[in-house]
Image 1: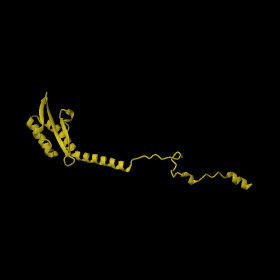
Image 2 (image 1 turned 120 degrees about the vertical axis):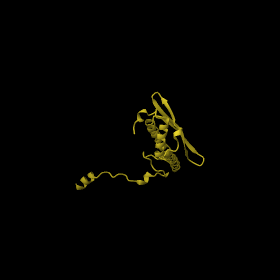
Image 3 (image 1 turned 180 degrees about the horizontal axis):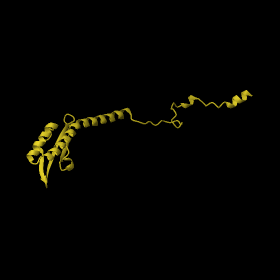
Image 4 (image 1 turned 45 degrees about the vertical axis):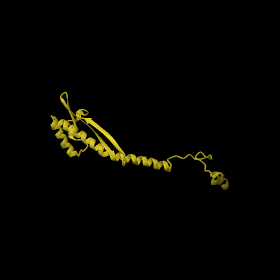
Length: 158
């Protein structure tokens, strides 16, 4: 009696035949259990190196363009402050020179500013190019332009 209850409590052992997982052709089973080539995902080594080179080149060009953008924002601030501070062309040029000296602006000078009067307001415009050397004879040229007319509300801010 005891043997009958022990036999009934036993469950059928799973078939652990690992040799069947590798068929005679030598190809492993894929996820669905059928024999076939498993689909590979991801990048190969060559494509990974190629993508890495492109990413590094873009980062390198981006890092070389940071000084150009930094100087552009300094020029923009100097033009806004000089336009708000000066009443005559000479005063605006001198104010811009002071700000250019403090912010180390080398791409544009006070002589390059186009100062005009629009109704009751003095408009200070500028335009210049910044050249970024990439390789021996390869350069990236960025053209910057702007005026204090573009940011009328920001001219009075410090």
